[in-house]
Image 1 (cartoon, rainbow, N blue to C red):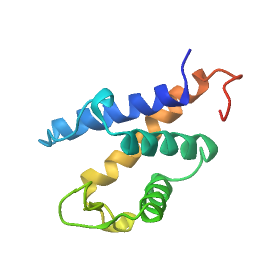
Image 2 (image 1 turned 90 degrees about the vertical axis):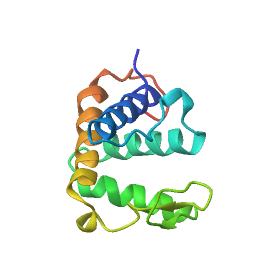
Image 3 (image 1 turned 180 degrees about the horizontal axis):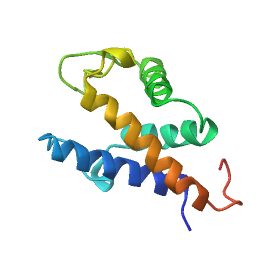
Length: 123
């Protein structure tokens, strides 16, 4: 049985693999990710399930709104302690490889969402 959390883990690990391929080895495994990061991925999965026809830019917009609501702001370097993130910009201002992450996330959700159990609460 796959769950929203299971899809979030798959999205996180796909993103981590992409980051690694791009030379960014700073991403930790799902099991080692802080709760705020796991919850953000779960929220991203829910957004994409609820909005399957939304463009990848909308997924980023949703992430950006969540970050803003929880006190994050732009920072040149990702710093969870300061709640700063270099991707805290409009989608069109993201570097191409960062935009690819939103496309990858959306594709993983689209591929796995049909496997969700019908009886799972909140999806």
